[in-house]
Length: 165
Image 1 (cartoon, rainbow, N blue to C red):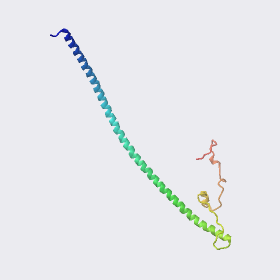
Image 2: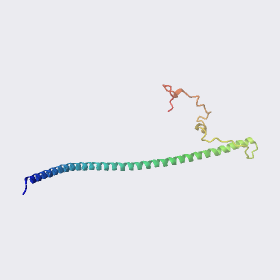
Image 3: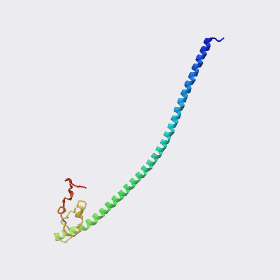
Image 4: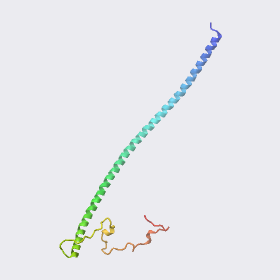
């Protein structure tokens, strides 16, 4: 037969089981909410990752275009420099040839022998060492004027500072 103590023990165990099930149900609900929240966050993060990947791809394409533009500009600059160097060499060689022959002729005339032998050569100043004004004749055909003769106080400003730009 079942006695009262056994019934009380059964009742206690059932109460513990019910409490345990309720506690598990609450935990399950909490975990379910957290899981839903995590899924929502994951979806928003995934969207943001997709947006950032699109931006990164755009930046990579822009960087490639910028690099190509820079390389193209450097190539054009290199070609321009080569053309300028060639032009300067051509100009120097064209200027040096007549200058040497006239100097040689002047020295031969001074020698008086007329035999085509040179007593000495007058060294030439390189075109790079001379200022631009020395390489070209004056525009008015007259003497070269002193650039300091026409100097005015235009460089000075109100504060006594020099305007260098």
